[in-house]
Length: 474
Image (cartoon, rainbow, N blue to C red; front, side):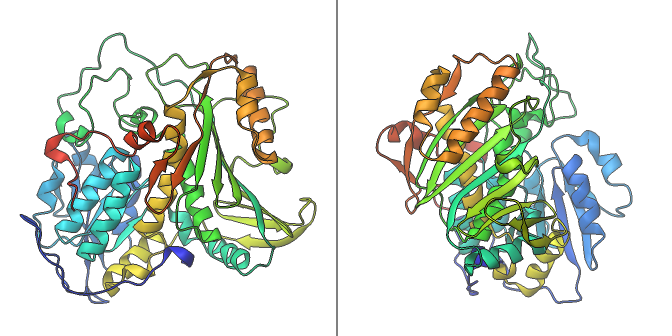
C-alpha cells in the first residue's frame, strides 16, 4: 500500500546464539494458519473472534498474565491452550503467528522474540513504546524474514489508498500543511493513597516485562496504564497514531519529521496519570508544517473542533494548493481550498480486510503485500513519540510564552489559540502549561541534534529489566 510497501527479499538467515531458526516453508493457500492471541481483554476478544472467523485460520493458544480471563476467552475454541508466559508460545512448533494486543511496553520485545522464534506477528498500535525499540523491530523483521503487520487497520481502507494515490499524483497540487488530531473526552482515572494490591490472579512480573515493576496508584489495573508514561504513551500513542499512519501512507512519508515543539498538560484531573490530556505539537516534515493535537477535555464554547469548521472529532486535514482534504476512519472528502465545495468523495470501510491481509501475506510468505508493515508503522509511531518527548522535557510556562514560541505557521497559531480557550474553560491554570523545547531531529539517523539533544536522546529508549530486555543486536 503506497510508500510503506517495499521489496521482500527471501532467503536463508543465520542463527543467533540460542535462537530458533525461522522456517522458509510457505503456508499453502488451503492450509490452516495457526494463531495465538497475546493479551485477551477487549482488543484481544476482537482479535480472537476476528481471526477465528477467517477461513482456514485457527486460534490455538491464548496468553495473558491475568489468568482470570482464560475460562471465558477459551469458550468456543476446542483444544485451545492457555499460557501466562508468552515464551511458552514460542516453543509451539505448530504455531505460525502471534497476535499481540498487550500493553504498549510489551509490543516490541514480544515482536522481536517471535521473529527470532520463526513466528509471524500482528502487533497492535503503537508498534513501539520508544523510537529505539521500533527500529529494532524493523531490524528483526528484516533479519528473520517474518511477516510483521501493525494493527492500524485504517491502512486497509480503500479510501486511504485512493486518496493517497491522488495526492501523490498531484491532483490537488503541492501540500501546504497538515493537521492530525483526536478529540475525545476522558474522565479522571482516580488516585489511591496507598499502592494498589495486585490481584493474585495477575503475574505482575510477566505483565511488567521490560518495563518497571513500580507501585501502581491507579484504582484500575487494566487499561488505565495508557495514561502513565512508564507503560503507555497517552492519547498520542492510543489514538493519534492511527492518523499519523494514514498520513505517512497518503503523503509517502518514510521518515520522521525534522523538528518538534510540544505544549500542553494534564488539566483539571488530580489523578494517578502523568500523560497530558491536552497536547499540541508543532512539527516540520522537510518544508511541510505538521500539527498534531489531542484533546481529552470537554469542548469549550469558542473553541473550534478543527480548522475550517469541518466539525469532526478526529482524522487528518491536508491543505493543498488546489484542494482541502479531510480523511478519517471510514472515508473522507476533498473540497475546494476554501472548504465550501466538494471535489471528490472517498468511500471507505474502516479497513475490515486488515486481518485477512495479514493471513494472505503469511500464506504467500511475502511481507511486501502488507498494508501496514512494521517499517511504516515504526515511522508513524515515532511521530507520536517525538510529540511526547518534547512534552516530557518541558517546563511550566505562562500562556504568553506558549503563544510566542509556537507561532511558526498559521495552523499552529490557530491550534494554540483553540487549545488555550479550551484549557481555560476547563479551569486549567494558564500559568502552568508545559512548554517543551524545540528539538531538531535527524530522520536518517533517528537521533536528536542541536540544543537539548542529550536529554532528548535519553528518551529514545528506557532502561529495561534484564529478564525481558531487547538486545542491542537482535
